[in-house]
Amino acid sequence: MNSTNRAANRLLILIVGLLLLVVGAAAAAAVLLPTVRDGWEGATGQVTDQVSAWLQQTPLGGTGASWIMPALLVLAVIGIIVLIVFIARQGRGHTGVAVREPTSEHGTTVVESAVAERALQDAIGGRSEFVASHVSTYRVKRTPVLKISVTCRRGVSPADAAAIVDDAVRALDVLLGRPLPALVQISGGFRARVTSTARLQ
Amino acid sequence: MSTTLTTPVADAHPAASGVREPAGAPDGADGLYRRIARRETHSPRSLLAIVLAVLLIVTLAWLGTEIVLALLGAPALLVAPADMFTSAVNLVDAPVGVVAAAGIVVALIGLVLVITAIAPGRRARHLLPTGRTVVVVDNEVIASALARHASLAGNVDPDNATVSVTHRRADVHLTPTSGIPVDQAAVIDHVSRQLDSYRLTPAVTARVRIAENGRIGA
Image 1 (cartoon, chains in turn orange, yellow):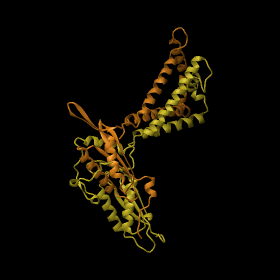
Image 2 (cartoon, one colour):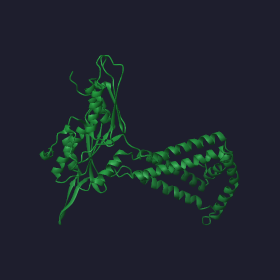
Image 3 (spheres, chains in turn yellow, cyan):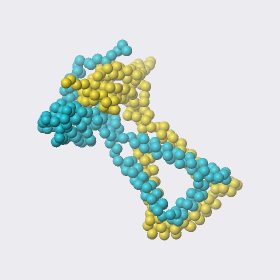
Image 4 (cartoon, chains in turn brown, cyan):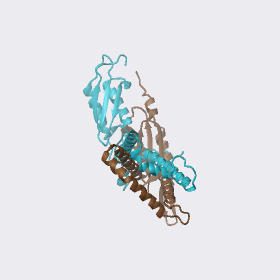
C-alpha cells in the first residue's frame, strides 16, 4: 500500500549481493586455484606500479598530494547521502485527504480521510468477529485508497469477515456519494490465537 | 459520532452465503486494484534493504574517516587506505585457509542476497474476491476457519484440529477422541465446500489426515 520503491530495494540487494559474490569468489579462487594464483602474483607488481603512477599523475594544486583520495571521500559522502534518502523513502504514502473535488468555480470541496476512517472504524469496531481493527488512507497512483485491517477472532470465516467490511464500505459509499477504492486486510494475530472459541457443552 | 454507517437496503446480502456480485469496484480502479493486490501479496524486501543500506553507510563512513585521517597524516582508526590496498593486492601471500574460508562465506552471503533480490518473495496470504474491495487474507485466518469447520464436521474438539495453509494446499489434521470414529469423507466434503465458497486466489485444495490413535478425554 505504501509508496516504497520496491524495485530500488531489490536493486540494492542485487548490487550488494553481486559485489559480495564476486569479491568472495575472487578471493577464494585466488588462493585455491593454482592458475588464478599465478596470474594474481604476476599482476601484483604491475597493479601497484599503475596505481602509484596514477597517484603521482594527479597532483592536487601545490600540496603534492593526489586528488584521488579527496575524490573518493566525496564519493563516499555522496553514497551516504543517497543511502539515507533511500532509507527515508521507505514506507511513506499516507494521506489526510479522501476526496478533493472542485465543486464550483469558486472553490474546492475537501473531505478529510479522517471522516471515512472514523465512520468505518465505528461500523466495524463493535463487531464481535474482530479483535481489533484499524483504518488508514494511502495514496496509490495519486488516488486515495482506504486500508482497512482487521484482526479476526479464532475460527471466523474470512468470507464472513470480508462481507462485513464490504458492507461497511458500501455504506460509506452511500454516505460520501462516491466509491473510494479500498483494501481489506484480514489477519489473525497472536491475540486471535489465544482467544478461544465460545463453546456450549 | 452522530453519523453511523447503516447497511444500505439495496446492497444487503446474506453474509454467510459466500456468493457476492462481482460489480461494485470504483470506476477505473482495475489497474489500481491489480497493483495493490500484487503489492500486498509480495514482500517489499524493505527490512533487508534497510539493513544493507545501514551497513553500507557505516562502511562508507568508516572509509571516509580513514581517508581524512590519512590525508591529515594522523594514525589510522583500524587500517590506513594504503595498507588496505597493499594487503588486497598481496592477498595470495596471506594464509590460504583463512582467505579461502572468508572468501567462500562472503560469496555465499552474496549468492543468498542475489537469490533474495530475484525471488518473488510471496507472502503467506491469499486474495478473496468481493468486487467492491481488494481483500487479502492471511493464511492463518483461513487455517483457523477451516479448523473450526473440520472439527465440527469430524466431531472432534477444536483444539484437536490442526490446519496449515500454504500457497496451494490446506492440510487438515484431526486427532479423534478415543472410541468415536471420524467420518473422513464428511470432513473432506465440508472443508472443500468451505474452501470453494471463499474462492481464494490462488486456489487451495484440502487434504485431510486423521490420526490413527485417538486421544482419551479430548
